[in-house]
Structure formats: structure tokens, C-alpha cells
Amino acid sequence: MYTFAFEKLDVWQLSRQFVTKIYKVTADFPEEEKFGLVSQIRRAAVSIPSNLAEGNARLLKDDKARFFQISYSSLMEVINQLIISFDLGYINEKQLNELRVDSSELSNKINALYKSVKNR
Image (cartoon, rainbow, N blue to C red):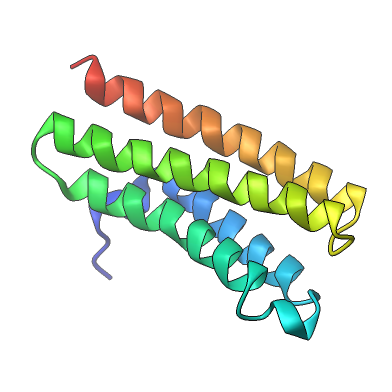
């Protein structure tokens, strides 16, 4: 089976796992949040690996860096929305903390990827 270059990135693989966790956690949100917070969190989460993939496919280093930066920004958006979800009682402290640990690892890897492109 053919694989694309972005599929070999550890950070992309981690971000896929993160998206899966986000989908599972948000499945338990109240029905009235289906088109609100759930939709926003999921869209931002999916944006993380999507922008990593698109950035990796770009030829110019500035283009690559821009998409990696967007990926990082989407991760920050997810973290913000998870904190709000905790404040509203949609997720518990354990869930928030586990996702924050995942987010921290992911943010470090995205930053490293960004720096590797910018410093070329």
C-alpha cells in the first residue's frame, strides 16, 4: 500500500489519535451542544492533522511553516474549548487533564516541526 509523506510524521499520527479521543469525549456531550460546542471542538481537532498534512505537501518553507502554525493554533483552540467544556460540566477534571497532557506533547512536536522548517 502506498503511503504519503505526511503519514510518516509522528506528529501527524499523534494528532490522529488526539482527534479520535476528542470524538469519543464529545460523544457524551448534551444533545443541545451537537451543533454548538461539539461541532466547534471536532472541527478544530480535525484541522490539526489536516493542516499538518497540507503543510507537509507544500514546497516552499514559508508555506510549510504557515500550515504548521495553523495546526498549532487549532490545537490551542481545542484546548480553550475543552476548558470551557469543563467549566460547563461536560467533561470532568480527569478527562481535561488527560487531554491537556496529549495537547502538551502534540504542541511540542508541532513546534519542533515548525522550527525545523523555519531554520532551514
